[in-house]
Amino acid sequence: MAAQNLQSVPAEPTGQAPASAATTEADAAGQAHFDRVIAEDSRIEPKDWMPAAYRKTLLRQISQHAHSEIIGMQPEANWITRAPSLKRKSILMAKVQDEAGHGLYLYSAAETLGQTRDKMMDDLIAGKARYSSIFNYPALSWADMGAIGWLVDGAAICNQVPLCRASYGPYGRAMVRICKEESFHQRQGFEILLELSNGTEAQKQMAQDAVNRWYAPALMMFGPPDDDSPNSKQSMAWNIKRFSNDELRSRFVGMMVEQVKVLGLTLPDDQVRYNEDTKKWEHGPLDWHEFQEVLAGRGPCNAQRLERRREAHDDGAWVREAAAAYAAKQLNKQKEYAA
Figure 1: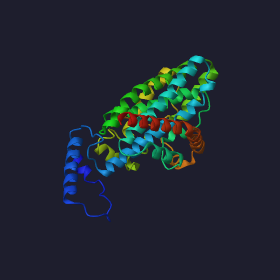
Figure 2 (figure 1 turned 180 degrees about the vertical axis):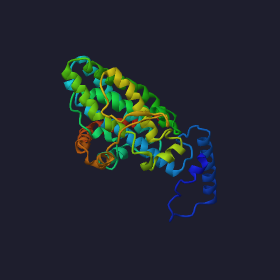
Figure 3 (figure 1 turned 120 degrees about the vertical axis):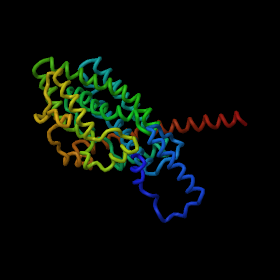
Figure 4 (figure 1 turned 45 degrees about the vertical axis):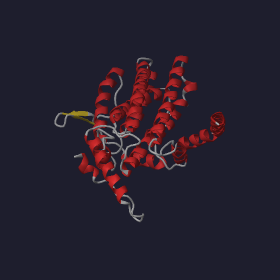
């Protein structure tokens, strides 16, 4: 089955010099090895032969994931100085620091595919690269820190745990640690909402308002419906993804239905139900026009997020320059000692 799907990989662009017999033979052997690894549900490593389309798909997915971790620091970092206690401040600082680390793991994984980190960052700050649509919404209250942790990080866990088994080795291994840390983030958000919902009536209402605003964007984090997702089928054939967007979204809804009862809050969706025929959770309609508008850069905070990233990148130029100069100096010393 995997081999049949792999036959749909686009051919290399024409107009180039004819490949030599040795190159053609090497590519055929490489494709055969790749097909066998995928069929055996094993791992492709950086030095292994891989189809150009597989490499391109991984670069797109991993770099977008890395960008999402970095941009995702912004709405939460904005609340560090406004956290209601020293304990909350220290926890939120640790969480934001974790997100920076996740971005670094993922940029490193993407670099094994031949893309430089500078190029990925340039594409991001130029607006050429995408990141998760969820981070283009504003965090209006402290309760949003809870909703982001519970809903957004909860959706991330649901989506990313299967990626620990991704067919590309560096990506799958990076996801193991990321998912462990995301589980802490989700529990931190749940605990914030739990405390607010058991506080004053105003605090409970603040928690409910945050859940109301983040619920639909969190569901759309999984991507468009399967019929409108052009990349999912091939990614699943290559064992990069394990489940479709709609399957993951249904699982997530089922998780939230039980957890929201413990919080004493409600989901802003009166159409949530378990379908006995399909054995899947269903939800009300989502505003996919809004989703596409946010992806196109016309969301509430798109411009603000990218501008802040550009500022941070420019402000950090002296650090990168100093690090590069130090590395060059150390390299010259090593050469002198070797001589």
